[in-house]
Image (cartoon, rainbow, N blue to C red; front, side, top):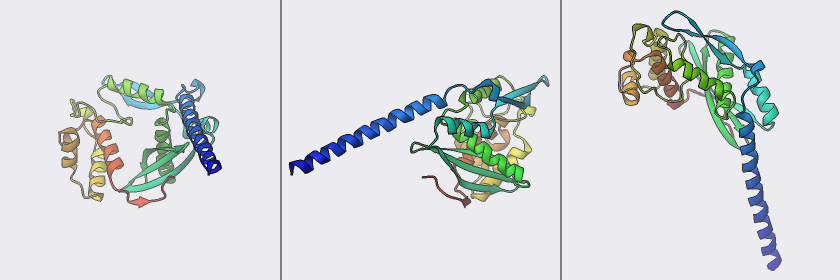
Length: 235
């Protein structure tokens, strides 16, 4: 009897030690993933034009760079495509990345008319899931900080929360036709009323939104809408 109790006690100690080790390992992995990306791996693209017509560039890294960082820092990482949603000529892909049992997701969008558009959606989703583990987070933060200083962006970076002032202040900053179409398409697919969703989240109507706020609403709708085409679940 005593031997059995001793064995159980030793097993409990081993389990507790293993759990503590896993927590420490994951914390160490996060610290490594959150380090600044090598400047040689950073690329630039045109982001938007400010009110003076000057081109603002955005720093970013390629999806395969993200995969290389994960391979080097967290060799046991895994990813899966959880959902694919189609909204007219747009496709939204949800990708999940799992590291040491912790799963985080990202959403990417692209055009359904070409294979490149579908790949773009998956690659963007992978990068956005990776950002939630800390990879290249400083680049995204820099992009948001730069965006907040402008008034007329042509392209809207991903926003993780609703802007404090969602209403457009100038005509050039108003929600685009493409954004309106996507919002209405998503809502139609899931039997939602666009203006009601907008009022509930940002206390204004859809056609009053700024481009930045419209992008936030689209991300919100994609994240909360029921999936149309389930692929497979992570874990």
